[in-house]
Image (cartoon, rainbow, N blue to C red; front, side, top):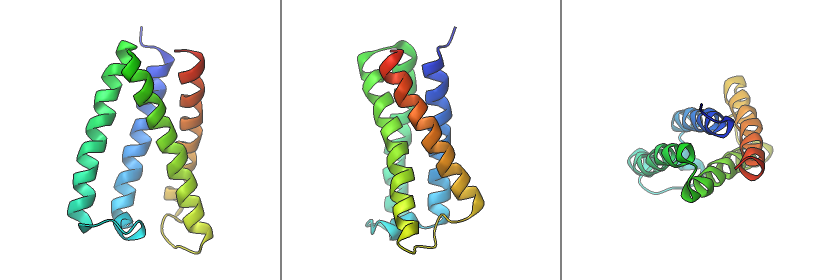
Length: 122
């Protein structure tokens, strides 16, 4: 049977990947002043999505590296919510749609759940 930790990892990872699709729509590389425009953004995300997928295997296996990747993914979700909330409060117009906001709040909730499970159920 697949553990709750794995299911929450899948949920949060899916939400984070969909957020990154939303980020491409909002041209997030401009917000963070990343070099390379869309090409650089895509290159970074090849690595990030690969790490998330590899992490799923390790979380499923219950390995120590899976434990750390699980925490990194969860903290990434808390960071995504926090930094975008900060930018919105600074007057930035990106990520203010209902869909973007709902996604960010869902990421925060699933990230907090993931952190809780990572440190209590592992």
